[in-house]
View 1 (cartoon, rainbow, N blue to C red):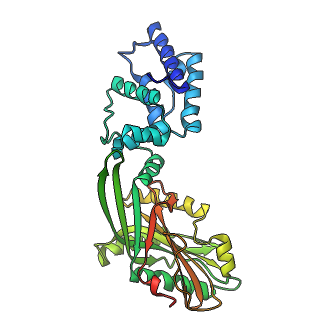
View 2: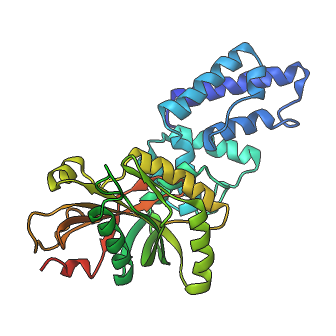
View 3: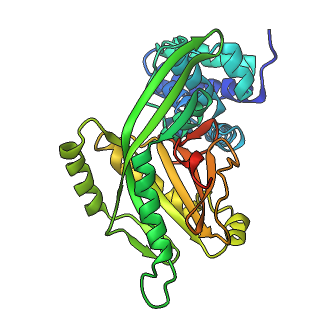
Length: 354
């Protein structure tokens, strides 16, 4: 039998404190499962101890150690391993190896689940998981391909190049633009032995509705919720087969050197934070954005540069008098971005610049 880790030893000691508390007339283990439910929630759902801390001073100390170890030291790996096991059907060996969960820790989890009546079964959905956990695990099992159709590309280029080339006003050389992407999402699933569920997610962007009332100021662009509401309402009338699949904004730069030095095709911390709020608000209305598009623009000194992909999720071309970098990012359930396992396909842009 595998030697217990420090975490398992601390959990066993915590159980002993709970038993002593129960023996003192606070309800036996078979009549009160709440302290053990708290352990389960701390280990697998990002919960916190409450009743357990009241059992004794030693119990409070052990509870603090377990919380810190699980959350800060180990980044909730037990919960994420359980998520991947139950939701995606990966083998116990894979999830333990992938998340660094020791055999004694998984055994403890299984024993606790059995005691609480939880069904710890592979591929059996268990609960609603924290969005950040689901995003992290889901990314391990998904590949995303973003297809930008001709009309959507035209929508983005016309708006972004105009805002870049025509000054907004005195002291403003150029500004950013923002739009909502409409299209369709197709998902193909397969199961691999031991690896569990694999998803191929194709995001087709057919239209981009630019927000004329979005506020461009201070080197950033801020979406207008009222404009978005109008776009969503009218989209159902004008092109009902299409759904909201993501958004788009531009990053303008004075020179190509500025663009490349700043890696202008990448999202900023402000972009991601704004996206978190946006995704959370849309979720309550039943929408789930899948892709974020960024178009970085800089003045070109010459024309006719063919499109050259810098990475699978980025395409570059020279259009008119501007260098353009178009980048696609996966939008996770919690609103964070990622370029991992993302491929951008844009048939038209590969022909521009010749």
